[in-house]
Image (cartoon, rainbow, N blue to C red; front, side):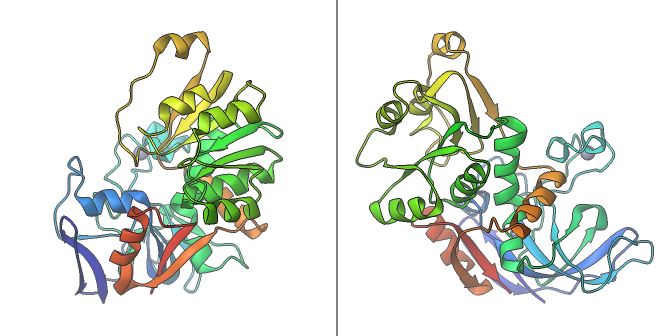
Length: 340
Ligand SMILES: [Zn+2]
């Protein structure tokens, strides 16, 4: 079977691997149909130093597929079921896992496609407990955006920032995979959405998605525009994932008692900010990484209800590298999907 592996920093190879054995106790075997690309794939591709892993590594952290075999002791799934897979090998029995806080597992073996072999291969065996059914009517392509992109946003907005209907939110990089999802999810509950983009073509697309105010961050200082739009009050919530370039301005965009939630640092990981501002303004800052299985199920339900991911590009497996380069260049509006 074909598998796409990282063999060295910035070097991918499509190789032939032996297919997996019949699924063991508690496992299902999945034929992968679509893989979603995320910034974590870019970090891995660049050879992020703290990733403890061995090359060659099968890449791909987010995917959907179809069940092709089940172990005799698995009753929750049958052959032909369309599914998505959790993107990390959690233990399933620590306190966090038992409480459904899967992304805080105390014994996690790693993120798929980053620390351990991922989903960019034709078939794999997975523990059935990490597999979730795709609702009827949701395509494999769209479902492949649930395990990371949609669920990360779900976890950030609703578990962490506790976004409420009617609130105002600033969504950074409204053209990114998670930015587009954040605009859609915030609009779906009746929020006012301000978003930033890097060019006018993206601004038009962000408006079409439902953003109420779009700021071209290359033309204007976004924090100044946000204060103008909100009559100097600031926003209730900032959805951060760009990091060093925007973080200080994001804090300045918050109203007193506002919440900032972040899951990324694509423009750099280090910032300086004023602690007096933090406590006097009573800001709440949430770090968010990944999502729970429940967030993934909710994401799939939202897709079934019509909140569909924005797809930038669909590529064949052999063009994965081109997808990563496109993601890295910020020339995207929505998600990049690689299909089998
Ligand atoms: Zn655990």
